[in-house]
Amino acid sequence: MPQALLLDINGVLYEDDLPLPGAVEALKSLRVRGIPFRLVTNASRRSRAATHAKLASIGFDVQLEQVFSAPQAVLRHLRKHQLRPYCLIHTALEEEFGMPLDDPSPNAVVIGDAEARFDYAHLNRAFQLLIQGMPLICMGANRYFSAGGELHLDAGPFVRALEYAADTEALVLGKPAPSFFRAALEDLGVAPEQALMIGDDVEADILGAQEVGLQACLVRTGKYRPGDEQRAPGAGLAADLAEAVARYC
Image (cartoon, rainbow, N blue to C red; front, side, top):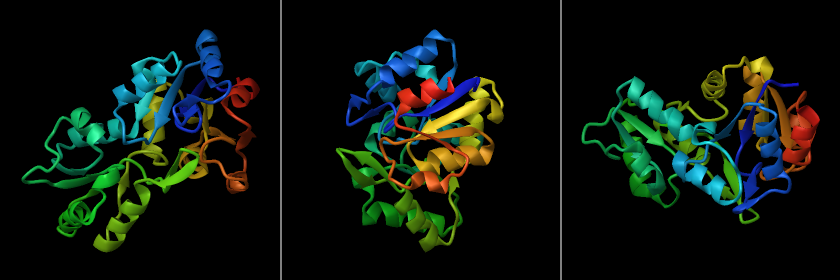
C-alpha cells in the first residue's frame, strides 16, 4: 500500500464544476485514515487560492497547502534564479504572480494557459525575446484539457510553436517534468517508490510519474480515451478515483 498519494484535480476530483461520483468520499477516507496526499495540477487559468476555494465550494474538505500547482513551481523558480519574466499567462494569475507581466528589461519568457491572450501580438513578443537567447519557461506542456464534455487546447501546442520558431527548448516546470513530481514528493516527505499518482492524463500524469519511479493508476474519467492504458505498461487502471482509492489504499 502506498504511504502517500498524488492526485490530479480536474478530471479526477471533478469535471465541469461537479464532483465526480465518489470523489468527495474518497478524499474524506484518505483524511480519516491519515494517508497524506497532494492535489497536483498544471491548471494555469486559476490561482492556487482560487483552486482551493473552488474545491471547497463543491464539497471537498482540503487545506490550501495540500494543493500543489505548476504556477507555484514556476514562481519558486523565478524567485530562486532572480528572473524578470515576460509573462504570457492568464489574467487570473496576475495577482498570484504579483510582478510586472512585461518587465521593461525581461530576461526570461513564462508561458501558461493564456487563453485569449494567445494571439499574434503576444506570441510574437515572446518569439522576439526568445530569439535573443532568453529561456522559455512553461507551466506545462499539456496538449488539451477537458471541459463541457469537450477537449480544448491547452498551453502545450503554443509552447511547441514557440520552441519550433525560436529553435529552443522549454523548461517545463509542471507535469510531466520530473522536477515537479520530486518537489511534490519532497513536500510530502516520501520517496517515489512509496507514493502513488492517480490521474486521467496518460502523458502528464501517468508516464511522468512512472519516469520518476512512482506507482501510477490511470482513471477512466476526464481526459481518458479508450486505449490510453496501452501507452503506460505497468500502470493500474480504475473506473474513477473512488475505485482507485478502494483498490490501493
